[in-house]
Image (tube, rainbow, N blue to C red; front, side, top):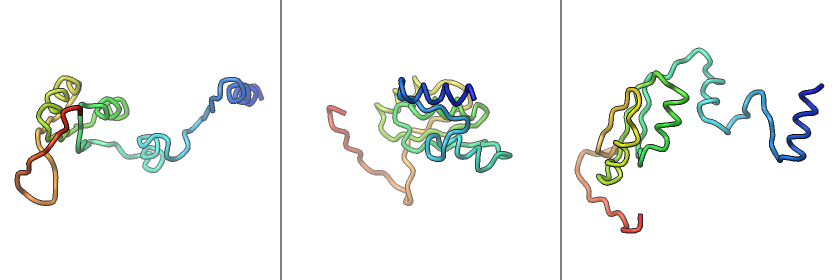
Length: 111
């Protein structure tokens, strides 16, 4: 009863919704844990890692997983190396694709 009152007040005055279990689609790791409660994620491929924003989320949700980061843009990769330095993280300065080869990547100056 008290929890219902608190939930109602939080919604009315703070515009917050309180969940016991997150609804599907809010957090991908919560969805995976709900769908596969017995599984343990051991390896993550972060393709297009950018500067490492996702790595922090992956590390928090799956602290024991090995994370393979792929970032082909050299300047962005350098920032990634500064941000992705916790746990088992393997940094790859390359892209993944369906064909083997080399391509030129154009990055706008204001990016």
